[in-house]
Length: 158
Image (cartoon, rainbow, N blue to C red; front, side, top):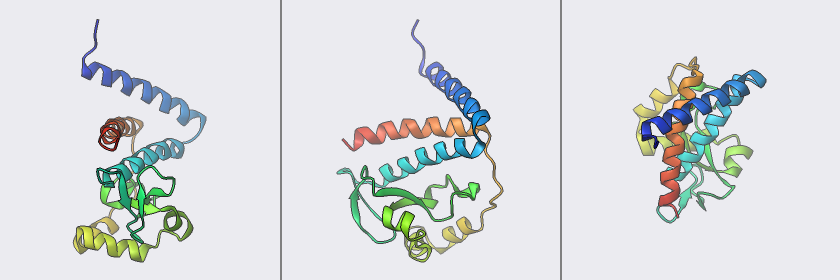
């Protein structure tokens, strides 16, 4: 018996949810959230790359390949503010030097965001309610979507 796409997706959802529940009981909610954040960051870097796989740091403009270790998904609003952790405009390509070593360079990052999205959109991002907590089911559903999009981006970037 062959499964439909919906049945296959439900099976993946069930397996991932069970895996997350085990990891959550073994570790913490923060660990599961981190797995999802890393998946989302990878997707954002891939989506930012052109068809040749090149992307640029939003802080300094450095050009790099999407799959280089140096190309990272940097957050304007820090990841511990979970309401903004998965907002696409909040996660953009940054080189490792600025993402990790220079505290993200928020002034330069903000200037880039304003050029890309406008002052009002940046202010809305800055004014988000930071008390959001995702359920495991929400995290699994989002991660499944992102993994599907990563598969499509991988084909595009070959």
